[in-house]
Length: 270
Ligand code: 1HA
Image (cartoon, rainbow, N blue to C red):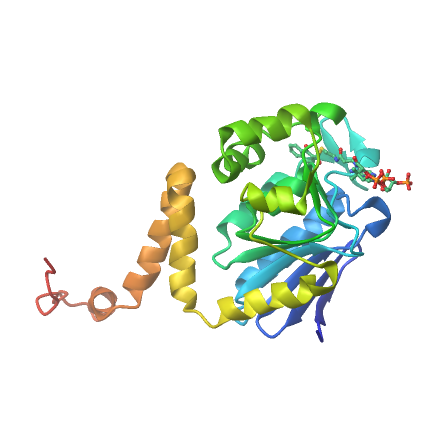
């Protein structure tokens, strides 16, 4: 596909093709493990994709065909988090997780090779996951002295069930693409050569759909699980729709025209 760079970064690629934005971790020598800078760059790209009204869907992936992401780069792990050039320890991937969850556009994980540790959690949070046959999934936290008790535990359990989620975290086994498909952890498995074609085809199908309907659905799926923050998202979308109505415009116009609003012509639906 003729992907066009949107912006240059050090540790990721950020590209666009039609209405699809692709954010790709570009550290294949480390199986696409992330540093604070990788995450900062992904966060910025995700925000740019959110603000860009020509983007309807985002692909999250890793370069090289051997790994989606192997989690936090253990070689820069210091006391209290992962350390960047400013020597400040950070767990900023948690902010990226929330961005993936709340961006009002579908995010599709395109997984080749390893999706491990914090990298596994990233694909779990994506709305959809498409896996190549060489994909391998798993958590490693209890092996390497870490755990993600947020979305990494609770949302994983919503996806695969409590027993399976506990197995994944307590045993730290690795699962192949067919295992993942069977437990509902991914939507589809394809040969590696077909991974990008299939993912783009899914994205193109999504792009044909009503963007507001997709937006409402994503926030509706999130609402119950995310508590007050989930309701805020769903309710924000209700406000967006209401602002588009003549009834809401009458309120604003009356205020600006310094008159009493006349809502009498608007129906009181049963
Ligand atoms: O848990 C969290 C968090 C929790 C709360 C809040 C924030 C969090 C943020 C992050 C995380 C985590 O991600 S903890 C989990 C961190 N990740 C891991 O434990 C996975 C480590 N990697 C592996 O177990 C293996 O590399 C592998 C199973 C994915 C692949 O094995 P393989 O095919 O044998 O490759 P390997 O030789 O191990 O890796 C290739 C190169 O990539 C190696 O470098 P080299 O020896 O050639 O110089 C390897 O060291 C490097 N590499 C792979 N993964 C990482 C890594 N280097 C640093 N960090 C990595 N995660």
